Image (cartoon, rainbow, N blue to C red; front, side, top):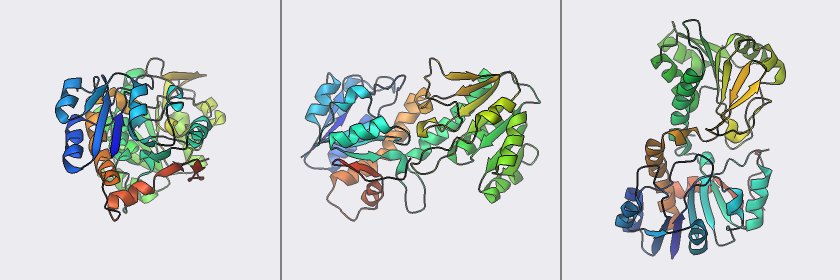
Length: 345
């Protein structure tokens, strides 16, 4: 029998829930020999009551210790926190956004636990798309631009630079246009991709190939920087070093370091919280909140749960040829005391 546990997230300011009631009901309807526990108030911020989960067929447990003790599969949103380390044992399979890169303490704790750990952020389909990461990245891109807009004094001369124009960067760029910005620079190693984006709105977008010279030139004059480089599971490169930060002379300029989950892209970046989101360096503010999608808990929880569902369903089934199981297995990072993926440092 598979026993699934959905703990209430304890990372500061994390408001999402990993599985919504509709998806729990579908899991129970589609699979024999499974049982699902949900911690009390786990879905509160996402708009789901304990009664909603009970109606879906789940059983409510009062505390996180009971969730881990009774469950064999733990379905989370964010990486286990220190309080959870001692609760994780060899019987557990854990699905979560782990973001192991740059977090040696987490890696070592999961190795010591002898659990199996699947990292959502590294699940890719055969087309190279990240089915679970992508919807969260789009929310993060939109919200990072909205937050930057709130934190800076906007005028018609405001210059935005978006570093890395993947899902986060595209969403941020589109949001910037909606907010009325007219000077948006795009810089990415895939120059043809961003050149096509520029063609869609050449009066607003300007594209630049990623290199040190272009990056430095753009950042010196930028008021808002959205930094969103992501390489599958790997630690982010600190491409915005102190030398570049020293050249950013605009008082109140802001860098939204959306890559902070993977270690951050500036030399000053360390994780912050929604309560105190900014790091001050000379005249530059650096925003380093690692769970931006939690500011939209209802939308983010629905999209996250819907994206997790087929992978969890495949894990519960006996179909070893399932494409979802194949994709999930690519995301196995720690397995019974062995560190499977060694490319993230």
